[in-house]
Image (cartoon, rainbow, N blue to C red; front, side):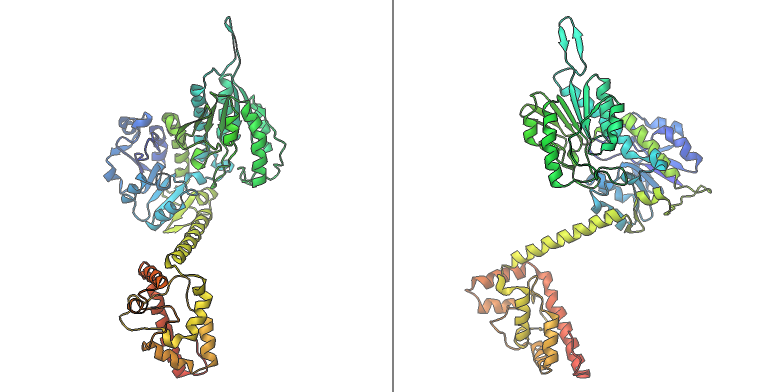
Length: 529
């Protein structure tokens, strides 16, 4: 079994998926490790360290034969540069990395279309057995620590209280929003630096954890009984709740020198907790570090990877803090990945994907050409429906017709005039109807059933008899001849020319009418379109 460690291509990414210390344990389980040249340089792991640990350091082109590819950022989490990885990935290859499956489901579908088996480390289930593989917790620990350091650098005062001959310096007031892994680490780091720390979380159950780290838990007198899901993550709350939460939180924010926000909901935009008005209520020189900026932000003024000044308050929106401490971040990531990889090895030291295993099943998002994670597939379905809805609206506008040409009215009109309106000559490349104006099949069916003589009219229509000005023109040349000075018809012609694909509609109608003709000859009593 061959494992390839790729050099990260995401701009500014300094982590590496596997460090030299993890290689011996993989070799004991039957893996041979290949590392792309320079993969660990930015994290402090030189090529020679990998060689000393038993790996082979090779050029990128020589990694194509590997069975498993390890990355920090796979395609979904590296949407631009990550596409070049597809050149190495043939059908059946396994990719393990962070790929943002709930934020970029289209990338998972793309990986599936290449036959790649993709494991998303963001989807590791929150169970005891999977704690050693929990990449999100590992990286959140780094982010929470780094966020406090950024705030300390920006703040124009010291964190700890100091009593000197020159006077007493009061400690910084730090407010942490969100008491998950990142929030708890931020609390611990700020306390070590000597700040007075308060923290808030929508989940009352974390109060004990906050207080155990020496911080004061802020209670906003809100109904939070249904704020936590079965996995322990915060749930999305209603608009009324969020509005009241913003009002009450603004008072605490105004008293703080530093605010660090970490509130996030998996697969959703981050909740807006600090409004611009609340920021204006803070003292000039105060600092906000928004760790949710990549998902829209908990603070209204924040922007991803930007330093914003709002009313004298510095607002930071970092999106990749773990990469700023690449050595330890890589060490933690490598341990998580190695543990997951060992879960895929059977007793005979062969790769085996046990789909009944909760960890394997939970992290697997694409397999054998299919998106297998239901949350990702649901997002893809929702995206397709949204795109289809937008396309329908756009096509209706591009045709430029009014309500008089709605689908119901047009269906009745075509039924009444079908013998006069359908020109189905062999060379009918431009014959088309605009979007949302299909003939109502049931109405045509009823018409032909009630009056079998209508079949004769349908036969005549197939031979392209005379046009009727009362119905929508179906041949562009006739539109030019008959409606040169009619603005409405010009608009229709423009819409028709811009949507040639709809020409297939009348071709399908032709086939249906042929079926009607044949059916009538066999049985006058059973006609259908």
